[in-house]
Image (cartoon, rainbow over the protein chains, first blue to last red):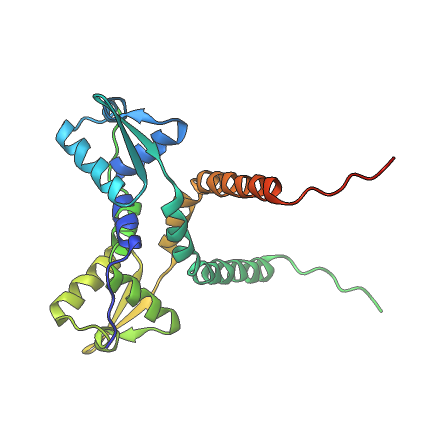
Length: 121
Length: 121
């Protein structure tokens, strides 16, 4: 019997499964931002923004620093490393398909190209 | 106003956010399997297994071929490529942290190492 417990990867991939959260991470690449400025481009309630930020925090992708009434959000990309390593294992499989497709196209090209005249020995 | 519509990436990352689904993909790396064999190592109901497989199918990560009563599941890793490319953009940010940490450790090592006696000119 195999047991699979939840892992940090669950939280990371769950955080990335939403376009608003991915856009928030993109925005924070440029600089840390207060919650209000981070939320500004999205036409969603502040409650929804807050929920998205909590998901990102649980995944360790955002660090929040509270100074008075300002909540500053900062990107922490480190947990993404494990996500990339997990996916990287499958690179060989999609690469195999690309290689097979290339080989097929090459074969078709060869069969369609006009034959060169043979040189006389 | 920025609009973020759902994309194939949502489905891929959502599919990866569960340890059972990740384990199923790992299993299918070796060979295509009928649903029953794919489900065997997990102590969950067949209904739950079926739901997980549907999530993987929606993300394009599993292709199902039905022959009579046998549903054969096959891995399709291609959609993971986009996921890896999305994450790769952030590599520079976690790399910056690793570089900063290495620089810090190097500085500490230097300050702790005994001074070499100066050569006489």
